[in-house]
Each structure stands twice: as C-alpha cells, then as structure tokens.
Image (tube, rainbow, N blue to C red):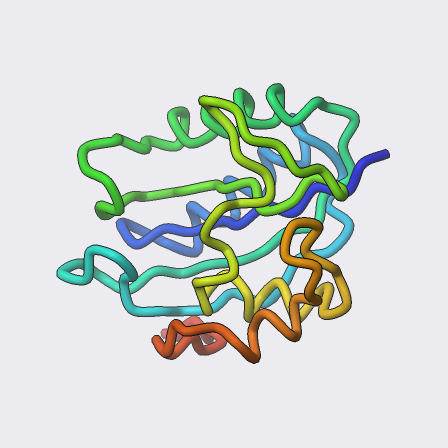
Length: 164
C-alpha cells in the first residue's frame, strides 16, 4: 500500500484535542497510522499575527487514491470545525498531504509533494523525526538535507503539555 505523509496543524481552541481527534478520524477513514512524530509548537508562519501552531507529521498506509485522500481530509477538517476565512489564517485543524509514495503530481486541486514543504521548518522537523532518509521525489534530496538547507528560521520546539 502507498505511503502517505500528512501534516496536521492547528492554533485555535484545545489544540492537542483537535490533533487527537484528527489522528483518530484519519485512522478510521484514511488508513493505518504507521508512525507519528512528536508534536511541535511553532510561531505562526505566513500570517504571523495569530496564536502559535501545534504541528505533527503522520505516516499513513492507505489504499485511497490521492484525490480521495484530499476529499477525506477536507471532510475531516470541516467536521472538526475548520472554517476557511483567510489564506494562512488561524484554524482549529489543518491537514496537508506532504507526500504520496514517490508521486509527483500537479492538478488544479492537488499538488504532490506539497509545494512549500521544503521551505517550512515546522514541516521538516517532525518529518525528519520519522523519516530522515525519505527522498523528496522532485528535489532529489533527503528530508535531513532539506532541513539543513531550509531558509525558515522560525523555532519549532517539541511541545510538552502542561499537566495542571
């Protein structure tokens, strides 16, 4: 079965709960979660006047087509309360397709690999944690190499939830 890599993120509400709900729904509707990175906290990227994000990368084994994965994750986002009000705006959950095996594809609705993953430390750090030797099929570099050359200098640190 194809290896799918997804990036989960969110910066509104109970961020860890939304990530957990997204993981549970992905496991039911998309495929088996083979690996999950730690959760990382990062200042907002792109549109910076908003709360910090929590992000996590999942490796999922799926028998769904890339288009069906996109349709399913968009439904999961909607069902968890995502509202698309502005580009790069604050949100309870965001689920992006990073890789789908070695597929390189660009359609009106879907670009694989994710076109900006090599520019985002908050994506590369958790991806390196679970698959440092994964090779980007378009750029022909490992995740570790992409991270080393990443122009994004925003700190992404492992998230430790406060236990009150």
